[in-house]
Amino acid sequence: MQTSADSVTIDSPQPEVVPVRMHSSRLSAATQVVMIAMFMLATLFGYGRWRTGSSDLVWPWLMDRQLVFSPAQFELGNVSPNQLIEEQIRVSNVSSRQLSIIGSQKSCGCIGLDEFPIEIAAGESQKLRIKIMAAKTAGKFEHHVKFFTNSSSGNVEVVTVAGIVD
Image (cartoon, rainbow, N blue to C red; front, side):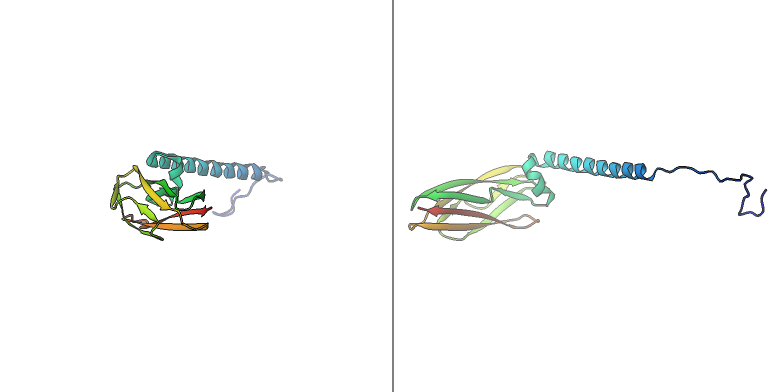
């Protein structure tokens, strides 16, 4: 029997009770959110791996670094006085355009580098030579090289060289 347009009277003495499983639906929803997030991260990582060509370059690419210098730190260990040490730095361009290393600033004259500018095509890597002349006297040393680039994500990259002269 209807008493007004907004209410309905039910002829049942007991209202119907419908059980609701709150915990299982919450767990299911949380599991679904986690699975979707994992799928999205895996997809992003896969795209980054495809884009950069290396699992090691995915994180710098995600952080919008366009030129990646590897290694960024050299630990030479013990070296002899006046020893000439030659190392190589791999520079990877993870951007979608050609970039250049246009110059450098060295912390001492004991460091020799390749000539600039150095062009690196999109998605390519190039090796740079670095030569370090160890000091004449015993002790620890640490030198830095700042590389200046035309990258829009930050135009200065620093490489550190450290060691001990015996």
